Length: 270
Image (cartoon, rainbow, N blue to C red; front, side, top):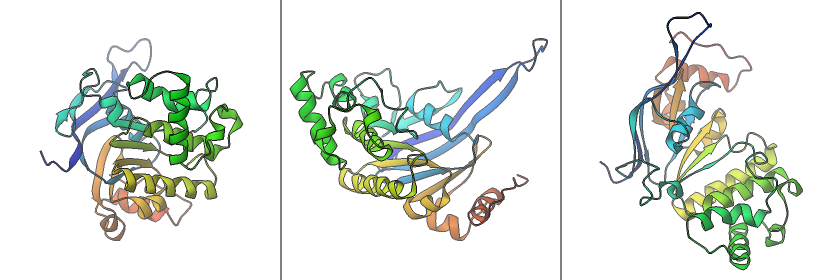
């Protein structure tokens, strides 16, 4: 396997079976993710785009081991991604930044505890109060926040501050791959720009790879190295960002690009 590939997904599927009614004999199947394959390279921003329900969030859950795959394989730096293997510390190496900066933080915990918890759990620092406070102060500085908020609770912070705390928590275990799940969609425009600039700066400083899950193609055009287009659980197209916007191959890709300048959106015949 290419040593520049940090994550490799091969034939990944997640199918949900259900009965339409109590009297059904056969189970029906929803193919949330269906035979998906792609690679993410080191230091790359790999955007995954598509309309709501296309399988983007399910894909991220499969990568994080939050839901069990139906079939397929996931490799991290050439090794099977197995979160039960404690020796490999995959939980440290792959982190996620959630969409809602408020609901993703424990409202009953102070900021220094939220940020330092992953580091304590993974044995990076000791659980002593001073160690946790010092560690949190350093992480807060890295994301442009004052250490004075370390003893605050999440509700005492603004939306932008909470998302910065979420970023600090992710970085506390020095991940190599960060999944950004609509990271600025819950923030206003000016704050969104600040958070995105911070994420780009952190990626450059720390040499991380990003999987950027979004529906905002304008952000994709500005930030991503490559684009992966999903529809109905399948991948329609993977291309370099410049090629995707200048010469999209699939009809659905063309429709997505056209929707950037139009309020209407009509599904194409695939």
